[in-house]
Amino acid sequence: AQSVTQLGSHVSVSEGALVLLRCNYSSSVPPYLFWYVQYPNQGLQLLLKYTTGATLVKGINGFEAEFKKSETSFHLTKPSAHMSDAAEYFCAVRRWGTNAGKSTFGDGTTLTVKP
Amino acid sequence: DGGITQSPKYLFRKEGQNVTLSCEQNLNHDAMYWYRQDPGQGLRLIYYSQIVNDFQKGDIAEGYSVSREKKESFPLTVTSAQKNPTAFYLCASSEMDTQYFGPGTRLTVL
Image (cartoon, rainbow over all chains, first blue to last red; front, side, top):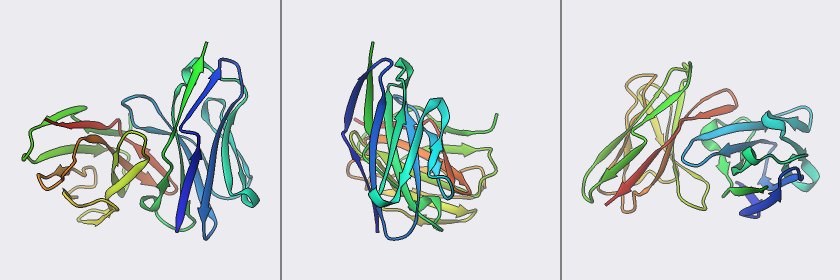
Protein backbone atom coordinates (compact mmCIF):
# COMPACT_ATOMS: atom_id res chain seq x y z
CA ALA A 1 0.00 0.00 0.00
CA GLN A 2 1.08 3.59 -0.48
CA SER A 3 -0.09 6.92 0.83
CA VAL A 4 0.83 10.58 0.81
CA THR A 5 0.38 13.17 3.54
CA GLN A 6 0.79 16.85 2.81
CA LEU A 7 1.24 18.72 6.08
CA GLY A 8 -0.69 21.95 6.05
CA SER A 9 -3.59 22.49 3.68
CA HIS A 10 -2.76 26.21 3.54
CA VAL A 11 0.64 27.90 3.65
CA SER A 12 1.14 31.65 3.53
CA VAL A 13 4.47 33.37 2.91
CA SER A 14 5.61 36.86 2.09
CA GLU A 15 7.03 37.68 -1.31
CA GLY A 16 10.76 36.96 -1.26
CA ALA A 17 10.53 34.53 1.67
CA LEU A 18 11.40 30.85 1.65
CA VAL A 19 8.70 28.47 0.45
CA LEU A 20 8.53 25.08 2.18
CA LEU A 21 5.72 22.65 1.38
CA ARG A 22 5.85 19.36 3.22
CA CYS A 23 5.16 15.91 1.87
CA ASN A 24 5.56 12.59 3.64
CA TYR A 25 4.87 9.29 1.97
CA SER A 26 4.57 5.64 2.80
CA SER A 27 5.47 2.93 0.37
CA SER A 28 6.46 -0.68 0.84
CA VAL A 29 8.90 -0.50 -2.07
CA PRO A 30 11.07 2.26 -3.54
CA PRO A 31 8.85 5.09 -4.70
CA TYR A 32 8.60 7.48 -7.55
CA LEU A 33 7.72 10.92 -6.17
CA PHE A 34 6.20 13.91 -7.90
CA TRP A 35 5.21 17.49 -7.23
CA TYR A 36 2.57 19.17 -9.36
CA VAL A 37 1.24 22.72 -9.40
CA GLN A 38 -2.34 23.67 -10.22
CA TYR A 39 -3.59 27.18 -10.94
CA PRO A 40 -7.31 27.91 -10.52
CA ASN A 41 -9.51 26.06 -12.96
CA GLN A 42 -6.55 24.52 -14.74
CA GLY A 43 -4.95 21.12 -15.00
CA LEU A 44 -1.89 19.93 -13.11
CA GLN A 45 1.58 20.80 -14.31
CA LEU A 46 4.59 18.73 -13.34
CA LEU A 47 7.10 20.71 -11.26
CA LEU A 48 9.62 17.95 -10.64
CA LYS A 49 9.98 14.24 -10.09
CA TYR A 50 12.25 11.78 -8.34
CA THR A 51 12.68 8.32 -9.82
CA THR A 52 16.23 7.17 -9.14
CA GLY A 53 19.66 8.72 -8.75
CA ALA A 54 20.32 12.10 -7.20
CA THR A 55 18.12 12.74 -4.21
CA LEU A 56 18.05 16.52 -4.71
CA VAL A 57 15.81 17.22 -7.66
CA LYS A 58 15.53 20.55 -9.39
CA GLY A 59 12.39 21.52 -11.20
CA ILE A 60 10.82 24.37 -13.06
CA ASN A 61 10.25 27.89 -11.74
CA GLY A 62 13.11 27.62 -9.24
CA PHE A 63 11.59 24.82 -7.16
CA GLU A 64 13.50 21.86 -5.82
CA ALA A 65 12.81 18.88 -3.58
CA GLU A 66 14.94 16.41 -1.69
CA PHE A 67 14.11 12.74 -1.32
CA LYS A 68 14.96 11.64 2.22
CA LYS A 69 14.39 7.94 2.57
CA SER A 70 15.12 7.85 6.30
CA GLU A 71 12.44 10.48 6.91
CA THR A 72 10.09 9.25 4.14
CA SER A 73 9.83 12.83 3.00
CA PHE A 74 9.91 14.77 -0.23
CA HIS A 75 9.50 18.41 0.78
CA LEU A 76 9.26 21.12 -1.88
CA THR A 77 11.25 24.32 -1.47
CA LYS A 78 11.95 27.57 -3.23
CA PRO A 79 14.40 30.13 -1.82
CA SER A 80 12.39 33.22 -2.70
CA ALA A 81 8.63 33.28 -3.26
CA HIS A 82 7.12 35.21 -6.12
CA MET A 83 3.54 36.36 -6.43
CA SER A 84 3.11 34.05 -9.42
CA ASP A 85 3.82 31.03 -7.17
CA ALA A 86 0.39 31.36 -5.57
CA ALA A 87 -1.37 28.13 -6.50
CA GLU A 88 -2.25 24.69 -5.19
CA TYR A 89 0.50 22.11 -4.98
CA PHE A 90 0.10 18.34 -4.99
CA CYS A 91 2.54 15.67 -3.98
CA ALA A 92 2.13 12.21 -5.50
CA VAL A 93 3.73 8.81 -4.97
CA ARG A 94 3.88 5.74 -7.09
CA ARG A 95 5.61 2.45 -6.44
CA TRP A 96 8.61 1.70 -8.59
CA GLY A 97 7.65 -0.42 -11.57
CA THR A 98 3.95 0.43 -11.60
CA ASN A 99 2.19 2.47 -14.23
CA ALA A 100 1.09 6.05 -13.78
CA GLY A 101 -2.48 5.02 -13.02
CA LYS A 102 -1.27 3.66 -9.72
CA SER A 103 -0.27 7.10 -8.44
CA THR A 104 -1.64 8.31 -5.12
CA PHE A 105 -2.07 12.05 -4.71
CA GLY A 106 -2.01 14.09 -1.55
CA ASP A 107 -4.89 16.40 -0.65
CA GLY A 108 -2.97 19.45 -1.79
CA THR A 109 -1.50 22.56 -0.20
CA THR A 110 -2.69 26.00 -1.18
CA LEU A 111 0.16 28.49 -1.25
CA THR A 112 -0.65 32.16 -0.70
CA VAL A 113 2.02 34.78 -1.36
CA LYS A 114 1.59 38.13 0.38
CA PRO A 115 3.05 41.30 -1.12
CA ASP B 1 1.67 22.26 -30.24
CA GLY B 2 1.34 18.86 -28.57
CA GLY B 3 -0.97 18.52 -25.66
CA ILE B 4 -4.23 17.40 -24.17
CA THR B 5 -7.52 19.15 -24.81
CA GLN B 6 -10.69 18.77 -22.83
CA SER B 7 -14.06 20.12 -23.78
CA PRO B 8 -16.17 21.80 -22.75
CA LYS B 9 -14.47 23.79 -19.99
CA TYR B 10 -17.76 24.24 -18.12
CA LEU B 11 -20.73 21.90 -18.33
CA PHE B 12 -24.12 22.06 -16.71
CA ARG B 13 -26.41 19.10 -16.47
CA LYS B 14 -29.83 18.43 -15.10
CA GLU B 15 -30.28 15.58 -12.69
CA GLY B 16 -31.04 12.33 -14.46
CA GLN B 17 -29.16 13.19 -17.63
CA ASN B 18 -26.09 11.48 -18.98
CA VAL B 19 -23.27 13.71 -20.18
CA THR B 20 -20.06 13.00 -22.05
CA LEU B 21 -16.78 14.80 -21.43
CA SER B 22 -14.27 14.91 -24.25
CA CYS B 23 -10.53 14.27 -23.95
CA GLU B 24 -8.16 14.34 -26.93
CA GLN B 25 -4.37 14.08 -27.00
CA ASN B 26 -1.84 14.46 -29.80
CA LEU B 27 1.15 13.33 -27.76
CA ASN B 28 1.02 9.79 -29.19
CA HIS B 29 0.73 8.37 -25.67
CA ASP B 30 -0.68 4.90 -25.20
CA ALA B 31 -1.99 5.43 -21.68
CA MET B 32 -4.82 7.79 -20.74
CA TYR B 33 -6.62 8.51 -17.47
CA TRP B 34 -9.66 10.20 -15.98
CA TYR B 35 -9.56 11.75 -12.51
CA ARG B 36 -12.12 13.46 -10.38
CA GLN B 37 -11.12 16.37 -8.14
CA ASP B 38 -13.23 17.69 -5.28
CA PRO B 39 -12.39 20.72 -3.11
CA GLY B 40 -9.78 19.97 -0.46
CA GLN B 41 -9.10 16.55 -1.86
CA GLY B 42 -6.50 15.06 -4.10
CA LEU B 43 -7.19 13.41 -7.41
CA ARG B 44 -9.15 10.19 -7.48
CA LEU B 45 -8.82 7.81 -10.41
CA ILE B 46 -12.03 6.96 -12.26
CA TYR B 47 -10.82 4.91 -15.24
CA TYR B 48 -7.62 4.37 -17.13
CA SER B 49 -6.64 2.85 -20.45
CA GLN B 50 -3.22 1.54 -21.34
CA ILE B 51 -4.02 0.69 -24.95
CA VAL B 52 -6.75 1.14 -27.54
CA ASN B 53 -9.87 -0.95 -26.95
CA ASP B 54 -8.87 -1.73 -23.37
CA PHE B 55 -9.58 0.10 -20.10
CA GLN B 56 -9.70 -0.62 -16.38
CA LYS B 57 -11.73 0.70 -13.48
CA GLY B 58 -10.03 2.99 -11.04
CA ASP B 59 -10.95 3.67 -7.44
CA ILE B 60 -14.30 5.38 -8.08
CA ALA B 61 -15.68 3.97 -11.37
CA GLU B 62 -19.30 3.56 -10.25
CA GLY B 63 -21.64 5.78 -12.27
CA TYR B 64 -19.08 6.42 -15.01
CA SER B 65 -18.26 4.77 -18.32
CA VAL B 66 -15.51 5.21 -20.91
CA SER B 67 -14.47 4.04 -24.36
CA ARG B 68 -11.13 3.93 -26.14
CA GLU B 69 -11.76 3.42 -29.82
CA LYS B 70 -8.86 5.62 -30.94
CA LYS B 71 -5.46 6.23 -29.44
CA GLU B 72 -6.07 9.97 -29.38
CA SER B 73 -9.45 9.95 -27.67
CA PHE B 74 -10.75 8.82 -24.27
CA PRO B 75 -14.25 10.20 -23.60
CA LEU B 76 -15.87 9.90 -20.19
CA THR B 77 -19.63 9.55 -19.74
CA VAL B 78 -21.13 10.58 -16.43
CA THR B 79 -24.33 8.63 -16.10
CA SER B 80 -27.43 9.31 -14.05
CA ALA B 81 -26.27 6.56 -11.72
CA GLN B 82 -23.49 8.81 -10.40
CA LYS B 83 -25.03 10.22 -7.22
CA ASN B 84 -22.81 13.24 -6.76
CA PRO B 85 -21.35 14.21 -10.13
CA THR B 86 -20.60 17.87 -9.50
CA ALA B 87 -16.79 18.06 -9.61
CA PHE B 88 -13.75 19.06 -11.63
CA TYR B 89 -12.73 16.33 -14.07
CA LEU B 90 -9.18 15.97 -15.29
CA CYS B 91 -7.93 13.86 -18.17
CA ALA B 92 -4.29 12.82 -18.42
CA SER B 93 -1.99 10.78 -20.60
CA SER B 94 1.39 9.34 -19.77
CA GLU B 95 4.73 8.43 -21.24
CA MET B 96 7.20 6.48 -19.15
CA ASP B 97 7.15 8.00 -15.64
CA THR B 98 5.32 11.22 -16.32
CA GLN B 99 1.65 12.14 -16.58
CA TYR B 100 0.49 15.15 -18.56
CA PHE B 101 -2.82 16.72 -17.66
CA GLY B 102 -5.48 18.50 -19.65
CA PRO B 103 -7.04 21.79 -18.52
CA GLY B 104 -10.10 20.10 -16.98
CA THR B 105 -13.89 20.25 -17.26
CA ARG B 106 -16.00 21.61 -14.44
CA LEU B 107 -19.30 19.75 -14.30
CA THR B 108 -22.20 21.17 -12.33
CA VAL B 109 -25.44 19.32 -11.82
CA LEU B 110 -28.41 21.63 -11.45
